[in-house]
Image (cartoon, rainbow, N blue to C red):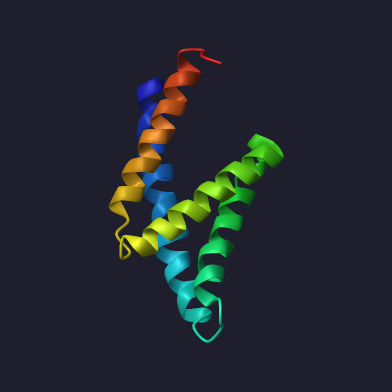
Length: 108
């Protein structure tokens, strides 16, 4: 079961979420907000907020804040890394792997 969860985490969460939230949304919103003074900030903030909201239903308000902050950091790194998603995919996968490892080991 643990290995099945890891496959899911690395494909759907690490790769899928980074492709969509950073690779697609940040890039598209940069185009949409190109003529706005803080367009780049909005292009990173909006996907981070949506990313955080996607975690509310099972993590609550704390999940919104924590994953929203992670989304801000990842969105910023995406731009700093010149739109290279691979470091973000790797880091996302490692964090989720450690989280699932803790869950399956019953660590608190």
